[in-house]
Length: 317
Image (cartoon, rainbow, N blue to C red; front, side):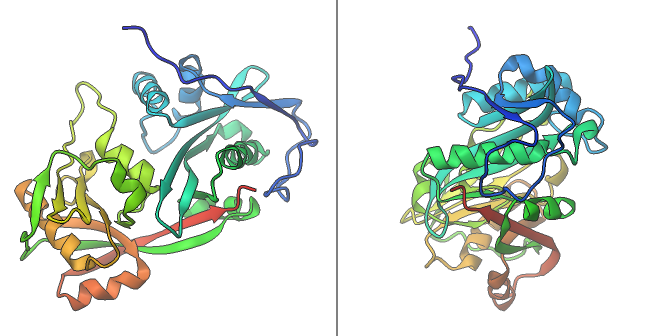
């Protein structure tokens, strides 16, 4: 079967130092580079994308050429917008954007899920140009905001680009003890309509659309741990819970839950605990808005805070 490619869009060329004004115009670009082209990626760009990541201390799906090929092909076929920044024929930057629509306060968004610049070209404006392309993509598609979940060391960069913290979250480890399965039933997967109708209450590592893709349309690589992401729904279909298992979290999977705001958070965690027990898990990893922390403690869960996760946004117009 021949490989299918994402539709190619016209490339955007930005002469360094002469870029047009946009929402993040305060960010400067080095003038010692001639021209950087930001364009949609194809499978032919995989070696260049892999070169960006292969020297990283932390392994990633992009750091090995074979896996990078599989991941990029998968993302192109699932509709994720993959862009590269090219300088004199060399790939020097990579960014992935996911467009999705979810209940307010998010609405229709374009989400930056991956941004990486080659070590030799950092601090020269390449990342800014990739973000500017995402803002343009969001404006073209009627998105109300551009979102991302920045690493702590990158927050200064995103601030200079105009991003601000939109949602403060806490990451907690919840011990699985007594659980309540009443009113829940197992399902093979979470239907896609859930993303647009029910808020993502637990597990906002990326956007709601991106989390749904990770759990229900994930990459499969032969010879690697094959994750199964068990799911359940409430009897009235006002809540869906799914566990995201990866190599490093088999004993404490990430809880991803979409639910009406009237559904108590403790009910979602309890249902997730039942799913986890069935897989031999002893704890749950939950990322929740900071203001929801008290409800878990009040409900009697054994909770340990392990970190903070901020969700940032930018007006793409």
